[in-house]
Length: 373
Image 1: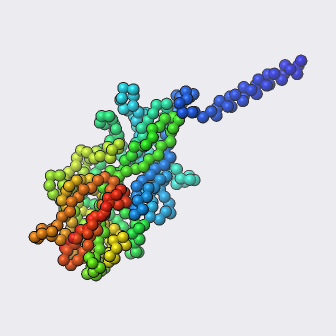
Image 2 (image 1 turned 180 degrees about the vertical axis):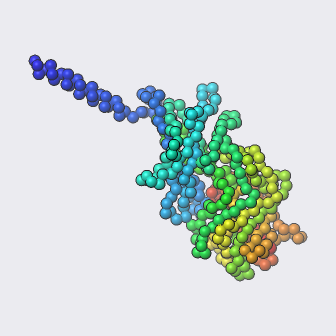
Image 3 (image 1 turned 90 degrees about the vertical axis):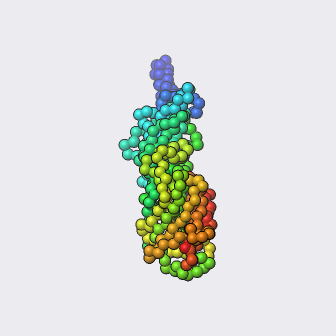
């Protein structure tokens, strides 16, 4: 009898302990009501970026280390989450945490995207949220428009840009050559494909370019050698008119669509100047064997007639060959965001010529050949 009295409470106690342990490790199931008011932190799983290489590859995860010709230069990204009420009103998911900075932590194994030091966690609940990302990550955003979406202010696009190569005189493999270093910010935007909530707190991004890229590949015409040993110092694009080439000192960027608005100023010309190692004019007949010698980032435009001016390291200036008369020739700029427009410039003592234009790398932009003199 005494044995039964002592055994029963012990069994009940063990049973209760087991029940409590099981309850503590239950994982929320999508659509379930358990712990629906318990927040789960937002996390970034993957970040992809279109990279301008001939393979047109996409980089996912974090910045690639030791991957020739295919790096992801992003190490930080700004993130915000919005929600929509039953009446259709859009607001920040948590007004106390309007945005977050995520950085690529190379110290973890494997590397991972983590909130920056001192960043408050953004807790997700049963409400669905739409996630946006942008770069430069230090830029702030506000909700504007109908419906409201994140908009970045103080977007600057320079009409005089400097690009940097650090080749050190070594030969450049065009197939692995990626041009990133410039004093112009590369504005990136993204809306995550999937919404988040406490049951789905991880998000992945594929960042898009809000600007277009123009690249210049300069070659001897018809296998000539008149410019052997000459280096490309500067490229100038000239195009007037009320709706011509653009710069910006304080534009706005819609993070949902990538569209620029606000203060976009028409300029007479855009200048791209070497601020590091200069590259020689190519001698190969095959454009695929010649590396890009100049590049820049530009505001998208449509139907703008443009002429090109090329300056070499010795100070000589060459213009596009006239299509008729003595006026320098022109080509039409149709630049869409996210595309890299490669202009192949054929040079002869009589002038320079755009042989073809291709859009490649970021998106399918193509190539254009340009005559110059």
